[in-house]
Image (tube, rainbow, N blue to C red):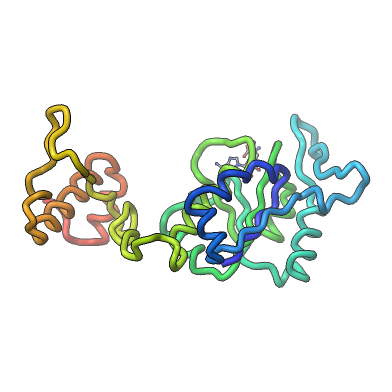
Length: 236
Ligand SMILES: C[S@@+](CC[C@H](N)C(=O)[O-])C[C@H]1O[C@@H](n2cnc3c(N)ncnc32)[C@H](O)[C@@H]1O
C-alpha cells in the first residue's frame, strides 16, 4: 500500500514512521509511506502557506493553492487522487471499522492541518473523508495521521507476525478483547485464572468469550448495547 502525507511539519514523523512496526513494514516493502512538505508547493519566495482568515479572527488559515498544487503534482490531476483523508476535529471519528475500510484501499492521501485549520475549499474539493481521532483539539493533524497510519498498517497483509492476531482483537467483533496473562502464574498475591493453565482449549475459549462480554459491558456500555442488539445473543 502507498500512503502520501502532506504536512507543514515533516520532522514530526521522524521516529513514529521509522520505528517498530511501521519501520519494519516500510523496510520490507509492505508499506510505501511518503511524507511531503506543504511548503514545497508554496508560490512565493518566502514559502508562505498560510494567511489571515477572511472575516477576521485569531490565528492563521492554511491556503488552498499549496494543497491543490500538491495533489496535481503527485497524481496528475485532482480527479486522479486516491482516497483523501483530511484530519480534522469535525470529521467522522476514527473507528476500527473505518480503519479496515482504509486498509483495503491500494493508496491513501492524508492532509494535515495546523493553526486554525485548512481553507474550506480543500475540505470540499479534495477530501473524500474528513476524519477525527477524538473529541479534543490537537495542535496539528500530524499526531492524528500517525494514529491512522499505524492502525491501517497493522492490518496490511504480512505486517503482523501472527496473521490471526487481529481476529480476536478489541472492536473486531464489536467487543473489547479478553484479559491477557503471562508468567508468573502467581504475582503479589494475584493468581492467573485456573482455566488458563488447565490445558482445556474449549474451556479457555469459553472463558475468553465470557470475559470479553463482561469487560465490554463494564467498561463500554455503549459498545455492549450495540453488540447485544446486532449479535442478538445478549449476555444475560
Ligand atoms: C488547532 S487545530 C484547528 C482546530 C479548529 N480551529 C477547530 O476549532 O476545529 C489544527 C489542526 O489540527 C488537526 N486536528 C486537531 N484536532 C484534531 C482531531 N481531533 N482529529 C484530527 N485532526 C485534528 C487538524 O488537521 C486541524 O486543522
